[in-house]
Length: 322
Image (cartoon, rainbow, N blue to C red):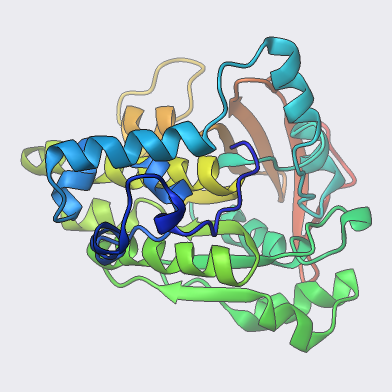
């Protein structure tokens, strides 16, 4: 985005009067940025606008807020000014070449590998000041498996020197009870991003509801379509708000193991794989958690080790291979 105020009124867009603006708001579109990110087809499905008006509105919004063609040099300069978020672990930050950046970071692993613990720790570090690796911002947590525990936040906060009230007031939790409710969580997140300075969105876990509600091969196509819609919505959040999104994902056992390959694979298939920007695989090893970068457009493949402690996710002293 080119820095246009995300709160610019819809009526400030040429050709959008009060009547059209009201129709857009009823469709859940409250800013010019949100209008710029939606397709004509989706706008027609969600609103009362006709096709011509929908095309005019979306094009006008894109022309106003989306950057034109950039040279590679200009794009690099934009990336140099990109925010970074420390994970609170020097090892993980090193693996990610400085910490989290805007995009979708997927944490993949079996139960007990530390996915939720990393998410909770990020809810703390995002509140730190910039000089401590934070963003001085808030977090929004979509909890699908009843894993969000504020007591754990307090334990981690002590390690980082944050007061109890400060850390609790800087995290907003939405408990999603099914996949439809999970989509509603995104609508709530959009409001908090604009009103509460939220810069970190967590979905823990991304796939559990879709997996349980659409079982069997006969439901596979519908499940993947729904997952695809959710992933695209997350990508839109990243584009609109330079947001850092972290999702956790479960693994499936693979009955026929290929020599040298992991005996498990992430849930969601190519839909989640292609939708995620960075993919980290977590697994238990030698009493620690080994984190491997398995897919990234910029990071080299590598792994680091961390320990799960009362204070959160901390660097392991021994990083030796198994």
